[in-house]
Length: 476
Ligand code: GLU
Picture: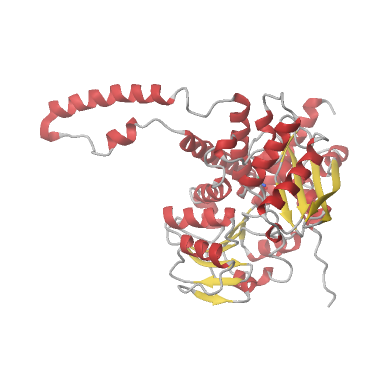
């Protein structure tokens, strides 16, 4: 038997795009225009480190400028290459369109293993990379707004923002040049947890639709569901934490770089995360069974599988052996196009990446708006809201006294009702609303049309239609 070759990541995204446009009514010219990446910039720069000049290669790809700024993270990994950055930029276009974040798609990457460098070295490398991008407007509040991705976080975003400030000292909107910054450097509450929180909200919305639960061969709610998570980084950790601590789900396995931990009664996510932070991996953790061949644990029986690490982890090689009912793609591109087909034939339901991990860019959008408006969310209305609530509570207290023993206010009501929403609550509310509405827009297309086999095709159709409308309105 000849082995069927696995497509590259970008080819995989194109195949998924093609499957959607094959059931759409777009002109071939527009179809091509939307699919291709507009530009990919490659930069090579030297930094003097440890007594010698080291040369680094970085990329920033702009997939679609139907809306500007374009948006997308910057990844630090040795696996970064042009094909990957272009695939990720394309996904950003569709992701933003699906959740109605008013951006085009972009992505950046630096070919580096950040663990090999000291903090001060990483700062110099990041500032130099930011300089190269900013001088070409590839970092710019109204043209291109990066964010964290794999291997980067608040710290790198603060360096990038500061570098941009230094280069644009009179730009009053300079803070909006990058999102995912620390709070004291213009960030927003809830951005760090946002992608994981979005995965939780996505699953909660899925479980509000009995027809969809049945389509996955499941029943009930998240309570008691057995979940396997691959990758306990920022996204996987927050998703696993919220699902287990707030929704009653059990994290029965965690798959990491150096192996997997299994506990059918449910792992303590915080304890595992702390162990990884102090030991560099999961091996040696006492309260679970350790399996050295971590990837094989993806095939273990469970209700929900959450790949939250790399792309292409469910492939033609292992797709047939995956033993779950539902996969939610917290990572970008964890299922290859070929594996997607196998899973569909097996009846495994997939909640696709462009929807499932859109929580990050959604809260980035809120941060960008906050930076442009120069005021924290809730600052004007919070106390006014509290004052109005106080009036109502005073009336209820009067009623309470008047009715005597026959009625009294629930003790916690007063405190809960009186408190005006702070920024974190507003961010979570905006994210929850976004995830619900985007899910509903996908499922409507999925259920309304016989030629739409799954949520992924539906998600691409919704997103591509919006991008196409925007190009048409511009008079392309
Ligand atoms: N890197 C994240 C993603 O892949 C976030 C992008 C952003 O916030 O712009 O969606």
